[in-house]
Image (tube, rainbow, N blue to C red; front, side, top):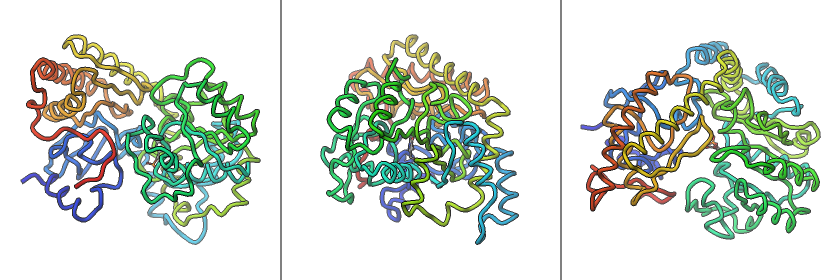
Length: 436
Ligand SMILES: Cc1ncc(COP(=O)(O)O)c(C=O)c1O
């Protein structure tokens, strides 16, 4: 009896969509066979409900656990804060310490607000920017969460958000009146961005984007965005929810030497404990006082405590450098293995968030088969590798060895008349859809 699959079957009856986060849906990886649930985790290892030990060479807590799972230093700080009371009528002093630390690390920023998840923190940032500029149109690129301001982009055209995360994100339930209140542009498309600015500049309250994600910024792209937003009095918000802490100690924008007006952190800032920070220039941030932005659990203690412990450890072990080093090896390993096995792949992403895509026929079948075969070798694996401090050189070596063997199987599948016959179950989903 497979406990993972049995529980997921039950979950789908009790929880619409099966999980709380789309990326944790097993159908996106290996329908019917992805382990789905864990009983414990340590470092880069997880144990599923059947007690099987697996090395996580996929998303490491969907990008949250840069230091590895159940990090002893972060856990110890959090446990102390729990024992001392993680919630009271008064505020925890750690939030002031964290605000000061974040402003020290990002000297252009002078104030901070806190939330607990990436998407809600992005909503807070957008609200503050709109309050500051008194203009409501948002230009954005990339993924920024599930909230109305963002999904509104898919009202005018259901394809508005395609290419920013997954195709087909439905804006059902989002007021039709929000149509055309946020509009997408593509990363590195300087011309497309300039056209939007030329058309809508005076109405734009904020430009929202990740400073880096799938591609490195092309020359002058970020500079142009900064120049134009400044010229039109538009608040520039950098979403560092996933890019932060991975290229340097703080936001990736520090590397590019482009200061935004606001930046948002979540996920990696606290290594798996709910925490998010919105930092910004003083005049912009002070607009938060003119809008009601307030929530009970934004005041609990474990989040700021986890963030302080995480940031200290990220600094102590120069973690960003290590993540880049691992990611570089992984990308090279994928390319070498593909070449050796005559597979066509495209490798991309910033090094610590490396990913690849199959370019031979039936890419979704190949992706599913990759996950299936790697699972056989004891790896939780997909077409991405989010590096963590917990991945040792030996883990990387073992992983690449398994990739080589797996790509061999994939090569045989590509050469066959029906690659799908190599699968034990269904092909993975490649977009957002309703589960039946
Ligand atoms: C860049 C970016 N922004 C926002 C979010 C949303 O964060 P959360 O899932 O914590 O709401 C994510 C999550 O993947 C992200 O990668």
